[in-house]
Amino acid sequence: WNKRDVAAAVRVPIEAAAAATSGGNGHDFLRPTVLVVPSTFDPDLPGAFTLSASVDGSTSGVAVALELVDFSQAFPHRAAVRGAPFPSPGGGRLSGSNPGASKSPIYRVKLKEGGGGGRIFVFLSQKQPLQGKQQQQQPQKQQKLPGLGCFVLRGWEAARQIRKSGNAPQASVLGGAPNFTDLQEISRAVDVPPPTEGDLGDEEDAILLVPTLFEPIRGGGGDAGSGGGPTFDLEVCSRDVEVESLELVVSPKDAAVTSSGGGSGAKKPQRLVVALP
Image 1 (cartoon, rainbow, N blue to C red):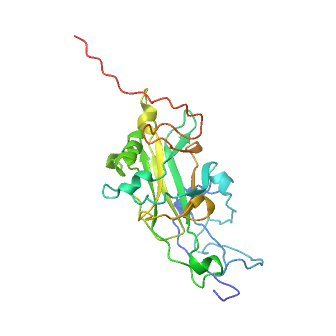
Image 2 (image 1 turned 180 degrees about the vertical axis):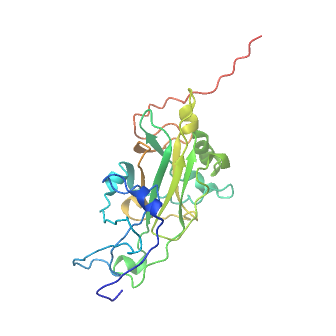
Image 3 (image 1 turned 120 degrees about the horizontal axis):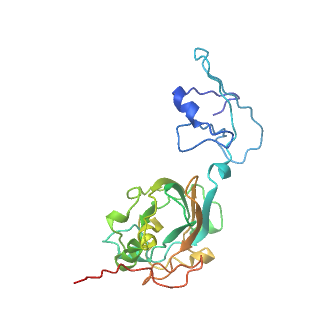
């Protein structure tokens, strides 16, 4: 790192590099591409840099260009929640052996009418409160963070089961169970199926996010809203899935009732079977 000039070489298939361009609208992150991130080892160091790229001379007919990535153009559909509290006490990973998970926050990814399936990207970060002397002085080393993960589920029945038992049906989990890591921020990509046709579409197709810590918070962790407990930022974005907002599911009895987006409290359609003689 302590060099004036650094260099790196990478081998990329020609067909993959050609398919990654997207007509001047940023790179298509859903296809193979090469991203270059110039950086200093330490943060907050002002200065300027020169960045260049070239192709091996033995490769004829191939040119290389550096294009600044515009994240807002690459992922135009996005919604976020900032500074939301983890439940205290309670929470933790979804599991039948962890009843405290029934208090976990559940967010519905509200999509625009007529939207189809595609890939969504979920970003989750945690902020732990300073403890003891850390509140008065800068800590010498960063405290170890608890494991962080985010479940992506499909269908309102998953939300009802979480509120009832702290667990969700395996069939409702999209993209598999999350890998909990002790990082400040994590991300994951999940493919969302196209909506189901019929009156029960929203009942079966609702996309739910459950941000959790690996272990539940025990005892009184303090008021997270006033800085006494852990909080999180949650963001979802997509290139093709038209995300409109994130809605907090507030009713443990009827998970279809949300805190925003015009929820009226009306129950979702139920399946009716009529037997004719």
